[in-house]
Length: 325
Image (cartoon, rainbow, N blue to C red; front, side):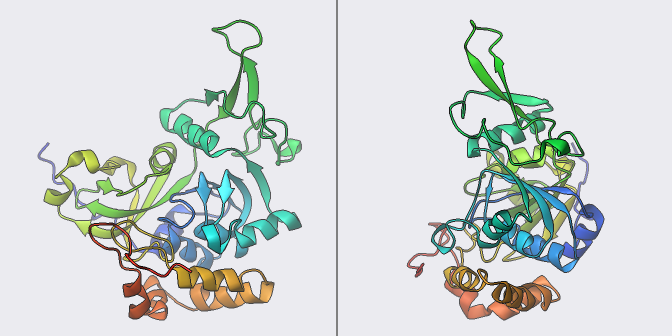
């Protein structure tokens, strides 16, 4: 075990990671959840790079998903839920794209999406469940039947079969596995050897990473090998699963990163006020995504005062006393 593994070949900028691993038409799994640990810096870089026809697969998501859809980067989506809490109970540009018919969408439950990523992570073609049998999830589908089986689109949304280990009438749902081209995650720590540690709720991030062909991890800090080897049960992903590491402090802003910073209620409200109109969204996109040439430029626009306001309490993991209105 004496091999000296380093990140030399994996550390890169967000622009380099997008250029190398995210072509037009790629199927992308977004890590994080609603207003927590969204891979925001990479999402903004994808928009700046002008990527199109992306196929998103998400457990439940929020700000990064909505920004990518609003910018016209996404043509197809499989998801359980999209929203940012009180700021947008349903993501704004996501909802409008569905209503206008400009986004092809298939919906599953949170549990079903988790099982689909788990199937992909385990190398299985499908996963069985009874969850959802008596819902419209099994009776309705969003994708055009003529598109089934093409590219990454499953040949069926799901299949209902008889349980082969029980008597007639005992039905189960078979859910198709998800194997994304790329998984995008934001983590608190990456060790010098490439080991990833995610603190707080993991959502479906680890299953997504294990199911994907490529994994891009943005992180708050690169930490010494000695640190990452302390409490090894806290580590999340081994180095061999990670293809690119992009050090980006505040890389999930305006969503939260447990123990580092809370979500930014002022910025999320700003987005919620601007995004409903096409002109307002274009203005937001210009000011907060396209004009800043880098993540650092974006942070300069946010300002040190506003960043410090959401800085997390090191014990609690979130910003104590933050005005969340």
